[in-house]
Image (cartoon, rainbow, N blue to C red; front, top):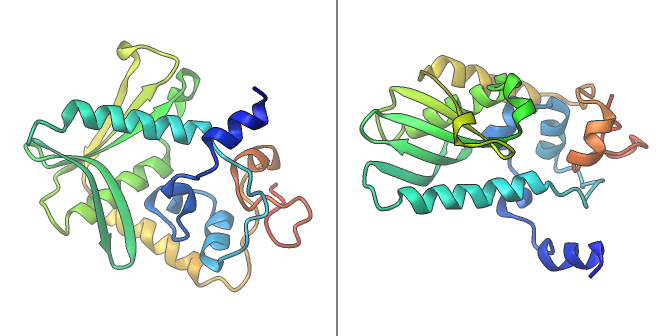
Length: 208
């Protein structure tokens, strides 16, 4: 079996997250150029980009869901739309009123955890969930794929709607732009992970 045969067998269908056209909470704190292209409906210029990490993360989420689904304390995989923002909330703890987001990563990347983008994301999830339930805090849980259970790291902070609103205001700023903002990511990163990477810069983004 060749690598191409493996790709065709396993990745002919993109995940729902890869197919979505709207901007999700996980993107809002990231590259503004990428967000702008998604909002504009720019045709993908790097369509074969497919992150194995994303697929593995989805599988890990399914494993967690199977472990927790019998306990009524946990609300799992909740989809909420509020004011045009759609979110898929991994977990809500009904006892502590905490919104939880699971992250898979690598040991070497734990030093960067949590990033501003991740904190904005989970605060937006808190904002979404607050339309249905009381939310007191938010939590990010990092599972290093190349580590053990002893290496799991968590980040907890109070739910702060001001942070969520600041993130959403940033999205509004990008929506108001008539021209694409400057590239924010290095092209070495973009060519592997961004569907809008375009070295010609004719349609997409050439990266930095």
